[in-house]
Length: 330
Image (cartoon, rainbow, N blue to C red; front, side, top):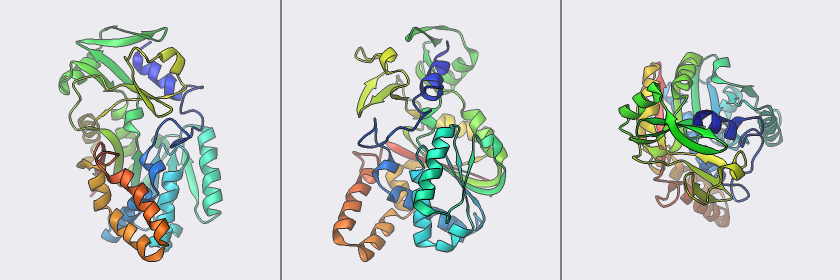
């Protein structure tokens, strides 16, 4: 089978890695910004309030997270909206795009435990089901989870018995490899359809996503497996695809130029790409921590600052992770 089909089965098949609830953080295979600090969602909430004040979002806009896993991120956004501008919690519409029924149930239960009836959460299985006039879309580590093709010097990979062979001719993959100046590496599959679905779903929106990668493509393979906080390069001799298939996360660095091109082809305007630490500071994370400092015990404040450092410090998530932003309908 093609490698993209193999990776799709690994992550999203009936027994795939993301098909059931997985712990993230200390007890899981990896950390994310969401599992590191509530102030990640808090900064996004502060940004949403600014968009309402600026008039880009109306008070009845849709706030939609894509690929929410356990629902912590959107719940953190709701919590900070309640703290900073509680009236908006009654007017904004909160949506999660989640394909798996088991994860939808997990998210509903978490929101019910966190907010009772105060927040109404709506689910859709894909962006193709959603229609709205005004929205803010947000995603964390989504583009690295799209299936990809593997490319090496003009040949595309197939997989047989968990072994990779580069012997397939594919004009589309070749075209993308040439466009992004790659003679080897990963070519993501599905960005174009995803961007087109989002553009069709909403008349006016801002989309913000956080992921690891660079604007330009890497000159080598970045495909890797995360298992119990160990990182195994896919082509490493110690990595057994057969043993880790569907039991661990598989991912690769995002080529943001490919994401940008997909959205521009869908009629959506690229706004900016910047390091996560810069984006979070711009969205007011330091001001939120100062509010906490004035209103909370010193011990709690110091604990939250230490967690926030993971989001901001260049040697943690601050520099390697990027924020990319798009808008439609300005």
